[in-house]
Length: 106
Image (cartoon, rainbow, N blue to C red):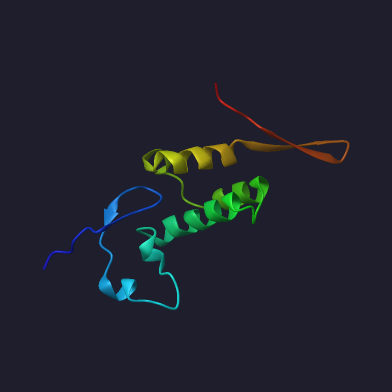
């Protein structure tokens, strides 16, 4: 029996099979309803927390740097944009005062 590719990953856009057992869960939202892998779910959580202002750009960058972003160029365009914006963030300290700046490529 072949598995129907019935969902698309919110991070990479790839189609994957989402089983009935996962869709029947009512007490929580299974990660498989959103993404195709645990690694993509970790990336999703960072972006979700950042866009909902639960973490700042500095923390989001720190957390993203701990993830495997080798396939970044294959991610959904909107996800790529958010990640690249976060990763472009720099903190600058002058006389023990912390400033932030975002490098934008032109």
